[in-house]
Amino acid sequence: MSKHQPEEVRRRQILDAAKRCFIQRGLDATTIRHIAEAAELSLGGIYFHYQSKDEIFRAICSETYGTVLSRWRSGDSPDDADSAEARIRAIAESNLRLLEDDPDHFRLALVLNGAAVVDPKLKAVKREQHLGFVGYLAGVLERGVDRHELVPHDTSAVAEGLVAIFDGLYLRCAIDADVHPRRSALTAIDLLVSALRRH
Image 1 (cartoon, helix red, strand yellow):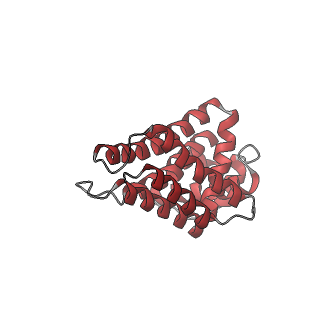
Image 2 (image 1 turned 60 degrees about the horizontal axis):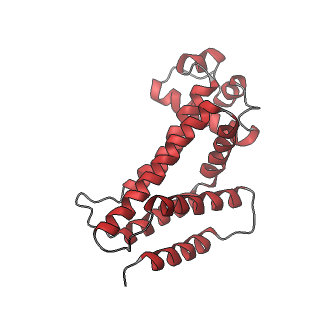
Image 3 (image 1 turned 90 degrees about the vertical axis):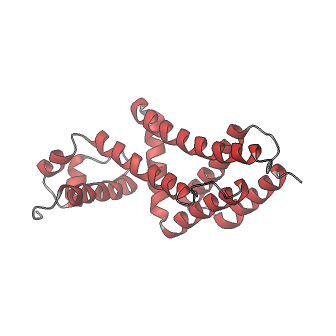
């Protein structure tokens, strides 16, 4: 087994091992023992940092979806000077780069989503993250309407649609369907923005 490491290093080691296990085996089939073996730790080494597989799952959910949302927000300017269209395009580019650079990120997201379908506690975690995405996008769209950049519309519904575009692309990529995420996403966003833009 490995030497003593700072807590943050050990937690990172455990979460990375759990992600690999979840992608390879699925959530239900993965045990704490599998995670311990993948992390090259004892069972006690895992339980010292996390009380259960559910706690590991919740930590991974927060990290996985938090990474996406923090990337979206990284382009925010202090005075919100960017137009709504520019922010939407920046968010799309951020998602596409993450998908292209780290396909496992979204394979993991699909595993987490599948688990959330059948487990009410996990569903609550996933729902909170989803509402964060939709709320952020709706806020961008509302600012666009307030500034008369976009025509008035149901911002929550459009935000849901934008999230669904990417969720669908992640699924198609995860199953190796013949899909071109960049072309498909940008074509859909071009059409959407054109329909919403004040002319």
